[in-house]
Amino acid sequence: MNNCHFLFHRHACIRYQVKGEGFPLVLLHGFLEHLGIWESFSDHLSTHFKVISIDIMGHGWTRAARKIFTVEFSASLINDLLSYLHIDRCLMAGHSMGGYSLLAMEELYPEKVAGMCMFHSIPWGDTAERKQQRDQLIHLIREGKRSLLVQQHLSSSFAPENMTRFAAEVERAKNIAMESDSTELISAIEGMKIRKDRTFVVESTHKPILWMIGEKDAYISKEKLLEVAQKTKNGKIVLLPHSGHMGFIEEKEKSAESFMWLYRQVLQG
Image 1: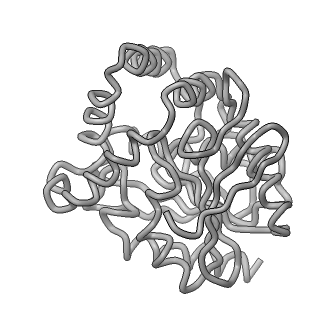
Image 2: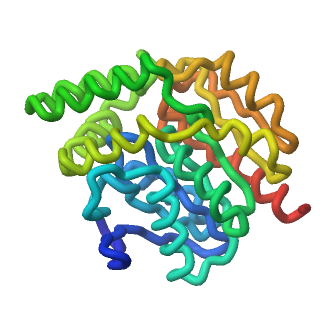
């Protein structure tokens, strides 16, 4: 990818990309993705924002010598990168797994976060059943069946009718999913398993929170997430009727427009 940069810091290598000018907006991708998954969406947003996309620990070309990549460690590296880029305050959006690091940022480095977007993401921790499912993912990776894992993951990520409609984007997401190092992925999965429940973070803050929820999301309980989202003090819920778990692709324009609410809330605050 063009215009990518690397920060070597604290025995870690962080890959990132910056597009556009304006108020900073940080994009944190989901599981089996890297910053490239945002390419079209970040182009769209860069007409209004300075968009910083980051490879989260365990994905893409971000690396660190650790057996487990906790979301707290991921947040610390994101904070270090923002300091390096002289960004004191920003909007931050986390897609699925990226939302876990976002909420860790809000808890540990709240001064950096002006507003949040939980993009198909949840604040609660893993259930025993979900941890078992993650162990199964690790088993598939270690057995050399990563292509099967990716195929299963993507078939549930997009709404069924969008698998054909966005065939090129699905294929690109598949290629992106195969690019991360297997050992690094396992470290990221282990970190997700032990993350704590941060529902208290979203329920206690007065900062604006944008909740992007796909009507056809196979990974998230819409009812449970709506129950939490409706309790936030300054929240906006955007339902994407034609989206599964990839609304920034499946309903790109509507998703991008929703970010302007987040920006207006920060300006008014």
